Image (cartoon, rainbow, N blue to C red; front, side, top):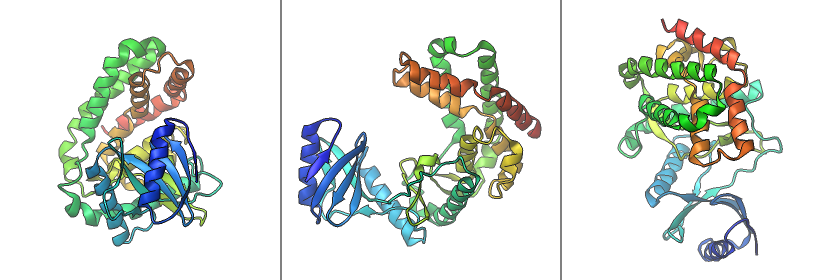
Length: 323
């Protein structure tokens, strides 16, 4: 057996040794994919070994993925169930997840067909999780976009003494006005959002959480951020992630059948005006103490400035549509 590691050799050796005693297969190789995520190659199959923040969160995800399969949603992984306790090293708790072999071409939102396929898969996921809401009502958090974005906005404004010198003054003034307008309008939509039909949201519909399998099927992975809320909240995040790719085109959004009903909802249109991507990246950059990293900082500056005129036009159109 061997390991391919970037980090603490001792802890990885111990992890490998423990896996050898706990898995019913011979471990041939252990490869670190990223921090606290490993590929486990055995003589029978491949697995993903992933750290979880707590035993409770691990068991919730094990139960949830089992529930998805039981209700007919097969486009995701299952967990490997240990007869005894999970893998624990230095108080770190790991779960073993079925490995899904991906195609040579990674999934991307850059192609129209891929965006449509992701939306279709999400809709299948919601059709399934709508049935699971009652079972997980007291287990999962309930999503509140107003609270989430209010906190993100407060953090961004607290970070402005550090970030502002790198953001053009006129852009920053517009961003601040959009933030304030969105939160003011969203607060008035609380009752409408509370009355929408609930599902179990995925919570992170970034492109890297979709895998195109070698069999050609699309899979949804990573349920770290699941919560209970209206499906429009995931679709809103999806729209926010693809808007820079489609040039901030409202007409392109309208061509996506599964998004069409939400483009007539006031709360959805309000949410499309919020610069959530810009706030998220500035907050992350400063939280991770990377302001002195020229490459990382310039990436966020570019994200802020690129297509700004197109974003401005789009935001003002959303504001007009909500009048």
